Length: 180
Image (cartoon, rainbow, N blue to C red; front, side, top):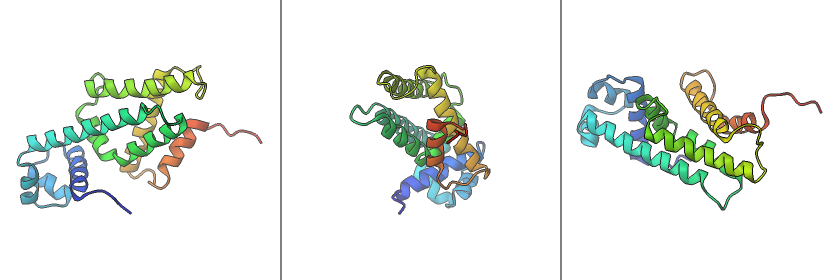
């Protein structure tokens, strides 16, 4: 059952439209999102307001990722699964954020990577994850894998079925075929 609200569905559709048509007019964005120009105008008024609405949603998503990664009451593997699932759940907003702030020097990305690094570092200190790969590199691997999968799904290269499961297997077990 889909628990997204109407506004969230609309916001996600508009985020996708903004990524796929970065220079599109409000009319073109509305059409791409499957709504009328009047509905879009009532929702945001201007393209600038639409961008601000999507940026606000992006900040909320990144804050939630930080909260998930810093939960001291859950096991690392549970947190990892929640991080993967949340990234996939919010893929449209994350894709939008990547399109406007592609550089990891942007403050939003700096904080994002810091929270992921802290998560991996604390799991390493507890002996859960291997220490021969730095927490910074694990954070980069994680972000690259998740973003790559999201992009490949958008391009139709892979099916969306069981993406979270496959990311977990790939990240936690690797690709090496282990002899029995």
